[in-house]
Image (cartoon, rainbow, N blue to C red):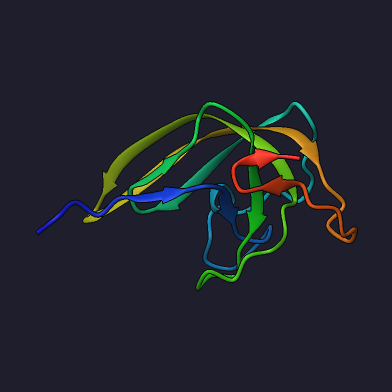
Length: 112
């Protein structure tokens, strides 16, 4: 038996107001540069804390949008609730993208 840990190169949250999801599991309806927001993800997840990563919208089952914004994870904590492991934390918006354009904002872990 091993330890199940997921390494995420991005933060993927649900669309604002998704039924059955808490506010922290969703992208806020309105995001603003330099503001901080809370997040919550199921599972023991590790995020890169030393630079900017993309904020994505997920529909679940690894169906991800193009980057919505560039963020910095400010803190990340693992905890157990019931019999499930969760990761919660805070992130700050560094830049908001127009997802309709074709510009590439990240190449791997490097912001363009």
